Image 1 (cartoon, rainbow over the protein chains, first blue to last red):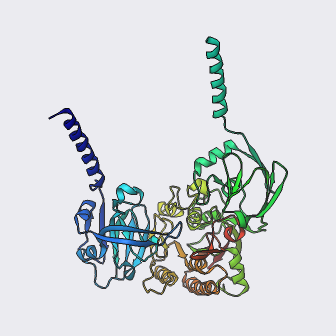
Image 2 (cartoon, rainbow over the protein chains, first blue to last red):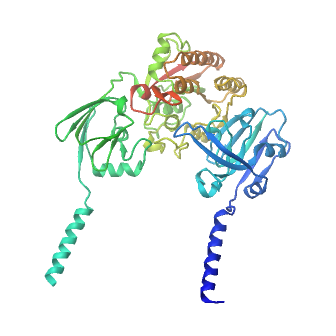
Amino acid sequence: MSKITKKILLVFAICTLILTACVSRPKVEWQLSFSGAVSNPLSVSYKELAKMPQTDLNEVFMDKSTGEDSVGSWSGVLLADLLTESGASEDFVSVTAFAADGYAIEITRDELENAIVALKEEGEWIQNADPEHGPIRLVCPQTPANRWVFQLLEIQVNQ
Amino acid sequence: MSRTIVHSTVFLLFFGLIAGCQPAWSIEIESSLDSINFSRPDYDSLLVRFPENEYCEGLLLEQVLYENGLEVIDSINITTAEAEIAVYLWRDIAESLCLQNNGELSMGEEILKPAQIFVSEVEIGPETIHITHITPTVLSALGLSTDMMPGKPITREKFEHVVMIFLDGFGFRKFQYAQENDLVSFLSEDDELLKGISVYPPRTTTGSAAVLTGLFPKDNGVDRGGIRKTEATTIFDIASEHGITSAAIEGESLAFNIRSTEVVLSGDRDLNGGTDDNVYKNAMEVISGSMPRLLWIHFHGIDDYGHTYGPDDSRVDEKITEINDYLLKIYNALPEDTLVIYFADHGMHNVDEEGRLGNHGHLIKEDMVVPVIIKTK
């Protein structure tokens, strides 16, 4: 193998490594738990969430109370699937979402339509692209941004 | 050759000095309070705390004025180095007047080189306190020490219970209007009505932090928008340390993070488009159940409606009437030996912006002056 070929292969290997590092799932220690009116209190790790079927939401309008509204694409796990897995009461009226920074909000059932626990924003892991708002974020389409809880830690189901 | 080297070195040193020097400037800021000289070093140290703002590059002049003790501004006269005088109403320019690192004031495309700024404040009148006085009042009423608080209690009477009723966005101007139009019957002649001065920027997070800690923004760390928690000790921390029971009834979300107490969120479970009825319901449950010694009840509707429709809209009046009804029922349900403090975090002024007709956040009377009412049972 000529020196030039070796160099080309080396550069190719380095580029592949860099690209892989960019697109592979970040290593994050994070648990999302489900509590309240649930028959199977779940605690799902970031890794487990990343392995679940992912749903894409495109051109989602984000209505912000401060700053400019925006439109973006998000992907993650359907909240409805996670609620089903945690055995959420069939007649639950709302959930309270808690964030790691102490923020909390009660969100009514109607507002949770098509909601996802997002891991990616604009195709990039939130943890890499916008770590302050990661690693996971509740995305509730058609609702004000104060319901899009970042650093999501716990979902409490209210009956 | 050696002479050339010496000349080059001197030239380079001189050039370096010139380039390294920051232009010195100083602006005289005068008001009825004081006269100060604000210079480049002052600018630099303030810029470290506020490297950016939501309105412009540089330092918002409003921030400079607040840091120098000015709280409620009516107008300013700017005298330029060429002795030209420009007069502005503060409400017209509060969010666009920025101080640059060369000492110039920018207002959009317009640039002014000020030599002196004269600030005319609004006369608030007697019986004025800061909202930070609410905190020592609560602690004193519960029999706790207020030594660590910069403010003094409004009353030193002791009570078994203290209820703090937070009327978000209910400024003094609107309160006076509500009084004149019989919308606030919860206020009786025996109650003490004070004018409270909020903190800058007058927002829910900064106002909440000031009331929870008894400290001004520079001391509790919540000195701009977007900060939702404080490292400073709060009244709930102190109550918890002393084994005093407490609870906080909030709206659908925690506008500001409250800790060391039982927080009850009140989402719009009945889907009627507001949370005040849910706050009321949860408050009544707590009062009729295990009434704590310290209770915080936060109504958001006046602020929400004010933002959406503008503070002078009749729908805001209807919201005040609705909340007044809740306040009457809550008061009637409270046990004897209770101190009730009604207060707001900020007021509101009319705007004409996309998506909203009311807003707050400036050193103007409508935003900064709020009612503080002391009632006993």
